[in-house]
Length: 241
Image (cartoon, one colour):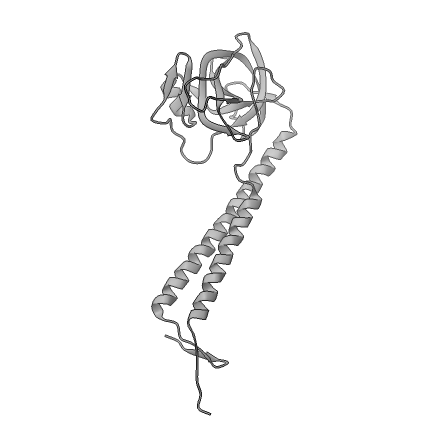
């Protein structure tokens, strides 16, 4: 290995330690850059949502181009009695469900409406009472395409009458389970609409600032590994007087 001498100190790293240190530094640095990329992605998502927030809802009908994520839209039709409860949802540290109800458009097509969060029984012995209007409705809301990992119905889908409890959200699998065809996006009911529950949806689960903090953390760890590598391989030299 290369040996360097400076200020009565000799740097003679062992090749095994060099390889391990290099791999560790590269790993931690890569994690840091990944967090920076995630922060930029979240910033773009927030910017896109903010740009669409000021737009007026447009009446969306089948045959039109599929709306964009977070786009404000309005739809006409009526609720169906089919209710789905998205399990294990939390609001202000309380357990509950997100209430999703099938909505039949005037054209006959079906779409899922997320009506918001409702508190549940932590013992899961009883289900919340969900009321669904039956009269024709003209709703406004925001388009939401489920994102992230592949959402699948959990292994313990429970159906009680017209209420179906699902573990995760996947419009395709929900359609198969209900034997009905639904659109690949859902509508998050606007706060101004009646017949909804708590509607406080976060655009991103983790803000960009936290990703920046994690990136700094990984870069600091990489730097610490470098310092330790150098310190552990510096040996004091003794010269003849």
